[in-house]
Image (cartoon, rainbow, N blue to C red; front, side, top):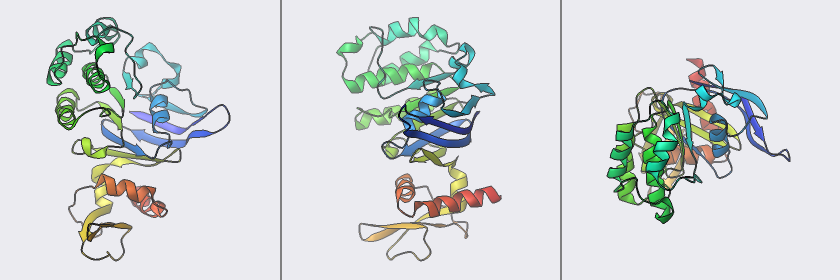
Length: 281
């Protein structure tokens, strides 16, 4: 499990990218969302020790990630949106780089590649951006690291490829793995997410399981404005709203609506309600 204690990161001129993040992040598939510049990628880089905190700390299973010890590094893999393969092919990368990861599964990598219509022998420089992303993801998932951090994994993928990605993720990710996916395209993998992390202005405003969010709020639709809603917006002749779930309603989470609410001028009201109610339990 990750433990973040007042984790902060500032650029050289003092501009804050991540500010005072305190959270525990355990196993499961986590959705990480936030506006452009919210600090999502910087947070992932801190979690993977590619950035060093300006202040605060980040530990994984009690070990300080920023110390970059080999036993810690071998348990965490970050696939950024700008990942470039230093090898001629993914097969060569698996032979050279994969040996540093004790649970790397060659068979799983080739099964993932096959689902995307690849063999692993293709020259990386000849592949389109979308095909390269498929190759990288096939490899990253086969590493079987306890922690996998993915930044915009569906970029460059067509509709069918996103469907295949859902299948590949389901097959590859174990129950005890911690997978954090930063994306603006929440609908691509929405059925898989178990936890939600919302960043805004460098701060982690929400970090909790979906089921706990749904204990406190419900997502409803109505032909008329909803009285007492924490947030609502018009939607094609009706209204979508987030309301206190005092009646114990069984609703599905609407990630787009939750994000819109969190980013709205009154978003703090809904987020404070969820966080306060949870902390009182």
